[in-house]
Image (cartoon, rainbow, N blue to C red; front, side):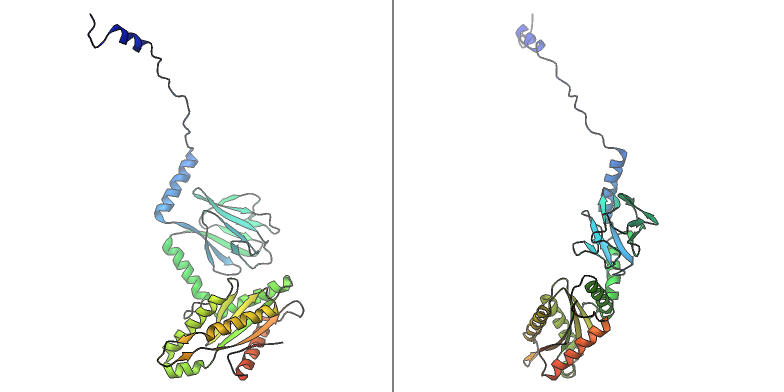
Length: 324
């Protein structure tokens, strides 16, 4: 006798069921290198580590750029992520990128080659902390592994050599070096370069009447106002005292004059936060270099802009005068 809960019909139904099929699908097993890459990525992410490129030789000397996951294209062309002014570089010279926990460098078909140490590379090559990368025979970069604090320190050190501490625009030393580069660039490509020398009107009177702390505030306000008007590719530097210099690449004489007038009128619209109503004005001298004349030396171009600025002062201030 079968228990009422287990009748022959139920047992027959159970015995007729097909056995459960076991899956034969293979589960992919990561390789040792893939596991190592994953571990390296997680460790670097946990530590906040990043890879930095520093210019050891070349222009701009000392500049630092981070190698993000998207990679960094290096070259002389404006479309490169890291633009270096070296005539030995190709427009798109090399690319440095991260893949997994490793950093790689590849040449992009450059004319003068990419080197890891003393060896010219022909294909993507793995590099690590401390590797020196030569580009075009002159420029030398160094790859470094750094944390957030070290990256910030490197950037501050670079800024301290090229930036004016008061206004945060570029300093005179950087201006002189960059202007020489811009003139050379214009000469190689039959291009133009304009120099605008901006001088704040009656600045000594502001200092004498309101104190140097107000004069410093005026310098910062004027520098910030000019940066809002300029293009990203234009260079703004403090030349000394209350004088600023702007270097504009690839502009016509007419457009350079329009830029100068925009700067003058924009600054004239500013006012000082003092008890009495006070406005700020500037006198601007402009010098221009292009293929129609012999390209001058940097000092000569600055001297022409300075002469034009003093003429603007003599004509009544708050105006633009172009030299030549």
